[in-house]
Length: 245
Ligand code: NDP
Image 1 (cartoon, rainbow, N blue to C red):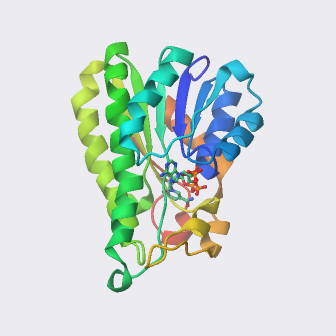
Image 2: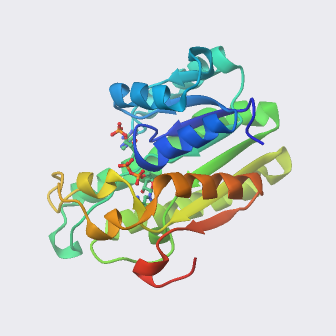
């Protein structure tokens, strides 16, 4: 399924994105690895075991929409096409509504929602020209329900569903697909970089996070669902929120 395909992953420097990179490489894909931290991307590129000509380290900030069109050209110059776009970059928060600085809400929407919108708009013309391509979007269980101290995070993830469900309807007859992934707790460093009410990094790891599903298992389940053409999937977290999975 992924053999010889080009997969572009945002948030590839850590956690679920890193695990997707390793698993996609194992299944024969060529990779474009994006996030802000280039050294971490280089580390992940090495961990995939891919030869240099099969992996492109492409640092970017998803909030820099103006830069993304150029990044698409860099990918096309290397691989000629894009088969999968894993829109996975994201940040979270820990703060009550009554305490939260509006700047925190803007930041969560800028990274989690507008970042994915911007990359979609940058790469969509190429996918329409190819008449094939698959967007895989990392939402969250928090994209389907409300969660205490995650109001902005939940809002940004709910917004992804509205946008990508609409995109799916628009491109269904153009050979393009959209899969939305809703993870529960997955064992990654995300909670240690969560934003506090004032927008500082909260800096504490979260016990529930530490007990979540391992990221490599999450990545395998995501790829299985993508290969099966699923439109929406849930993975991990059953024990914590007491719902589905
Ligand atoms: P990590 O913190 O391990 O990974 C987040 C990734 O996003 C990092 O690679 C980070 O890289 C990147 N990133 C953050 N901001 C930006 C930015 N402005 N531009 C580009 N890249 C950025 O967390 P996870 O692996 O857990 O998170 C991955 C996705 O999974 C997120 O969308 C998250 O919301 C979602 N998710 C995670 C769950 C979990 O329990 N872990 C549960 C549900 C959903 P860098 O800092 O180098 O830019």
